[in-house]
Length: 258
Image (cartoon, rainbow, N blue to C red; front, side):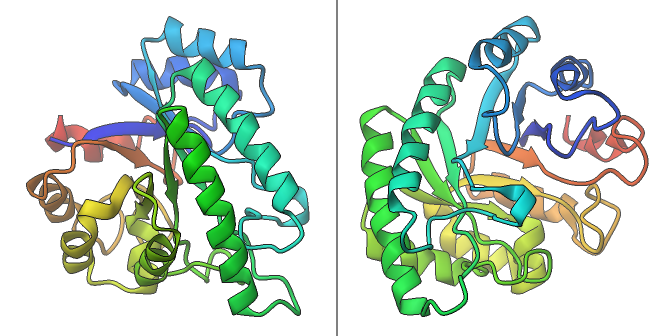
């Protein structure tokens, strides 16, 4: 049976962020994740987790200035010092929140930078981050994201992520496999999950089209989630979707999996 984590960046948006922890617990979630803890004091987040009996499943490394459209910096030459500072910041938060997984966003390929140069930069950054995080007992994952939602994003397909993992050569670097992004870019979900499961460190879900809750679109989640179980995945499955109405009204899809 899958273990679901509520992504508080996407779910319970009817509430202020710090109130979403209690709402997630009341809805039956045992874990939460979100893009970035950094706008909030670690002590406040820690207290919210403890008060509601929640596990912090995942958050992202610092990903640059989202207001300027940045979606990570791992592939961007010249940002290495900023990337390393972000790794240190993430480690501090991970320890405070007892979080054992951190996701690295590649970022968008800058104009005038070759794919070769961006790949070399990302590989170097991931080697550094994977080693630093391993020393602290924290897994590093990196996520392919579809090019429709984020045009210009550097890593779009599972095969591209696997090639980067091979180049890094760390036993502490895995893929964050988002079923929604994979469906948009490549399909073949069952085969890709089967072939890649040993290198997947975290899974996220949403349906397509619209990135709404499972059951709202074309993906056969009854089969996909059963398949993930059959492959032996026992980690958290992050619910990173946009509810079509309200979060609570849209949670009926979870009933068969509880």
